[in-house]
Length: 153
Image (cartoon, rainbow, N blue to C red; front, side, top):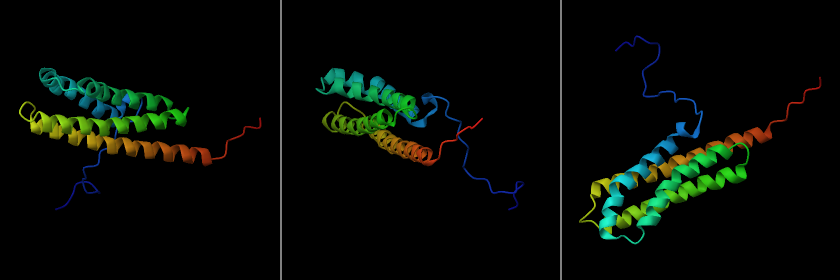
């Protein structure tokens, strides 16, 4: 089959430039997870009185906030930015534990498919946050290795 273009079509699409934390895919996915937990899981947990309900909601809402704060500090203070990304990754791990507990304890009340999908999304987002961590670290390490430009005018 001949292609009208000199290159074979691929699924690759360039991403939009990141102008704010809202452009980060990890932020968008974290916010999506927080909304899903608050809208779909929280009402069920109010009925059954899950003892860690409040901690679960706070954890899901803090993940996007940590990402936003880390984005704000990424070039000014890596001592602040990287621990915030660590907190976001820890939050994703906690959400997996909370969702697995809810799925197994309240299997008669909560849809298994919905909790499995949320668990999968939090595991995926944790990996994406880690990739962002590595990318920022690589960029900052390269930036530190470059010699400063001195203007002798």
